[in-house]
Length: 462
Image 1: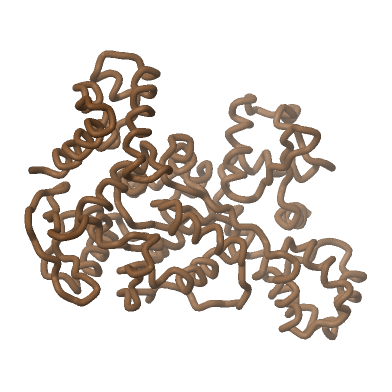
Image 2: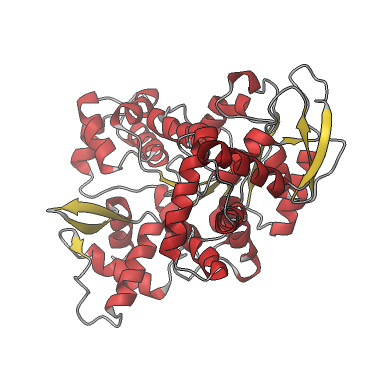
C-alpha cells in the first residue's frame, strides 16, 4: 500500500465515523490534489468545476480532518501533518538507540516508510515534543562566520524560533544591508534551536557553487551517519529534521539588473527553493542575502510555509553595548550617533574606531566637527551595493537623493525616461535591496532612501 492510499483510508474511516458516509470521489480527488501540492485552480481544472467550489469543499473537508490533525490544519501543512502522525522513516532509531519494529512497508516518493506496532507511526521528529529533542545533532559550520559582536537580537530570535518550531515554516529569507548582522543572527539562532534538529549545515555561496554541487555536499553530509542512501534532498528533509543555512546568496543574483534576478546558470536555484517551500517535509532552509529574490517575493503571495525577515539596525540598548565596548566618551550623545548610523553594527564599529583614534573617544567633538554623515571605511561596503545597480536604479537613486522629504509612489520624476510601471519596478527593486524604505504617513505609503546610503551618493557626486 502506498502512502497516499494509507492516508486516504484513514481519512475515509474518519469521515465515516463522523458522518456515517464515506468520502465522495470528488473529495478523494481534492484530497489527492492537496497531497500532491496542486493549487485549487489546478484541482478545479481536473474536476471540471470552479475554483471557488473546490475551495469550499476543501475547507469543509479539512475542517473534519483537523479533529485528528490539529486545529491549525490547512492546505499547505496537510501532508506534513499527516506524514508526521502516520509515517516513520526506515532509518530512524528510537531514543534508546534501537530500530523501531517494522510491521508494514510502503513508499513516500521513493523513500521506504514503515508503520510501527504498538504506537502511532510518526515522522522521526515532532517539533512540539520535548522527548524528541536531539542532544547530539550532526553539525557542519565550517563555512559559518565567526561571531563579530555579542549583540542579542531577542525579538528577531524569538520570531525565527516561532516560525521554525511552532509554525513549521520550511523556507526563510533573512535579507538586509551588508554589515547589518544577518549571519551573526543566524549563528545566534543555531545556539537556540540546535537540539531540535538532527542535522545542521551551513554553506556560503561566496565561490558561486552550482546547485548540483550544493546537492552533492548535502547528500554526502546527510548520509555520513546512515546505512541507507536516499534519492533526493527532499527525501532527507522528510526523513530527518534538517536545518540548512545558505549564506551570501546575493552572489548568485545578477549584477547590473533589478534586485534578486538569478544569474543565467543559477536559475535552477529558484526552482529548488520553490520545491523546498511547496513540498511537504519537516526541515527548514534559511537563505541569507543582501537582496530578496523576485521569486521569493512571488511565493509569499501563494500561501506557502515561507517567511521573510528584513533585518534592520540594532535597537538603541543593544547598539549602546557596542559603543561601551569601544570605551567612547560623552554617553549622552551616543543615542544621536546610533540614530545617524541607524544602529548598523558594522558601521558603528567603524565610526567608533575613528572617534577613538582621531577624537580621543569624544562623541560630542566628532558630531560637532563632522557636518555631514561620515562614512569612513564603510563607504567601500556601500560601493559594493551601488555597483550592482542597473542604470534605471542609479537614475532613480540620484533623484531620490535630491528630495527633501519621503516621496509618494505616484511622484514619478520629471524629465524621466521611465514609465510609471517601470518607476514602480525600480522602487520595488531598491526596497528588495534594503536601500529604500517604505513608511506609512497619513494612511498612505511613502518611500525614502536610506540616509547613510544617501550620504554615500551625495559624496560620490561631489
